[in-house]
Image (cartoon, rainbow, N blue to C red; front, side):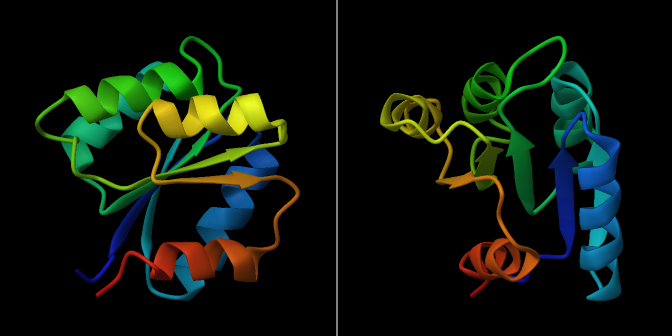
Length: 122
């Protein structure tokens, strides 16, 4: 699968703007959501190829968003890469248990994020 559209979910505008600019320069279409509810709406309406999901979000946290994405037939197959500053083993386990394909800890460089995205391209 060629990844064309990426949903970035982060309430920190500096992070989401940075990712939108860097990924956009590489030809990806990037959609931004700043809270959990908006993430669910955009994931369903825009059908991104992959989702970069922060854990700490307003309205619904990333774990709950991921559980809902994975239980929705429209978004259940969309890969979710969780991003979080929380790097304790129990946090990572909770992220993966909620359905995320990968759990990445911040700070993480753009080349590492891009490499993880490309793991899902065939």
